[in-house]
Length: 458
Image 1: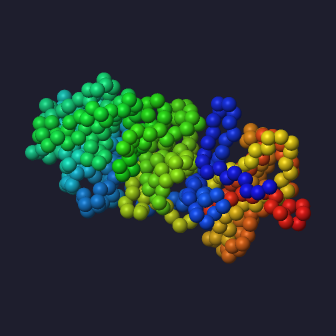
Image 2: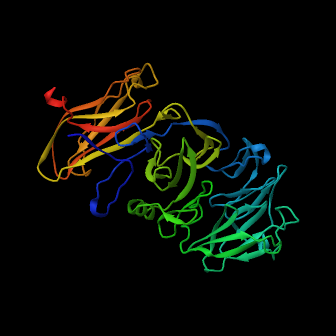
Image 3: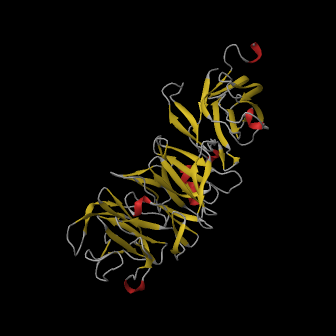
């Protein structure tokens, strides 16, 4: 029997006991030279860039050309600039921030603050109201008034710290409250709990933006923190539990399994980043971090060993580099060259299967093809990296014990990870789950069973 299906996506659903496919710390990538045209690649490990404050690191911020391109974070209750503490940021919600060419404005759902390179100051919001979110368009700041349909802007002739109580408008096509605001392609995107509206610059100083009625969508965002941005794409978790991307239009990108997982989670925090030609939208839930890859349209899971989820809770791209803020402490992470998370094991999982509609199928030999012989350590346990496998005869309801085989020592490029005499399998089919934890680059190309010349016939 030839090549079997290598799952390129993480999927699980309790409804109907559908067969789960586990994909953790791997993601699919197109490959013109491999059998299926798709391989599985491992995410790199996390390495500490620096530690700013005590954490958690709730936001990482930077705009080229503003403040010399310096990086800012909010760690714990404080704002940091390249590791130097600037001042206190009060609030309890996710961070919303925006930069002009001369100022950083940010809020955590209550007070709104301005940093102008000299000092950090709380902005007096009209009537002492709370600010839910901020955005900047054409060097003009827009402020969402929490619990309302209203958004304000600063006086064009003043700096961002002056908001005229009469300088506001309302998202009036629906009475739902605004929870976020973004700028895309010169447009102001107002995101409510049930609707999304688009406003364009008007060049009118009294009303600097005007609504476009043809650009309203009848879905809103789940909550503050459920909206992210990747260039000109706004991915978000909708108030209906689906995941969407908003660009030229509105497109759902989730599946029922993801949606049920989101519905059962109390927490739902999102962030996005690009790396290695891939663009990832991360949905951080109570016990898991789901990641959607816009490059392939596939979902995977990012996880940290011994941690409830994946340690990052925010991300910042600066060129090809990506910086992550930690969900517990003040660590700023980057992707490193080693396949460990700061010295901890980087556990990767993937799944292969084939269906057996009737009768039985003997599995005499199974081969996993990938980039063997690439391990980095030359001594110790990781010098002979192992690939572990366990099998299931009932569509993943139960599994046999883990067994391991070599993934090739340094220079053993022609090694094939092999398992023999795995027994006989019946309907619904054969399923194998694989695990790798050693410090070795992990590219998985395909899984084959019972090739001629293998198994008992060899």
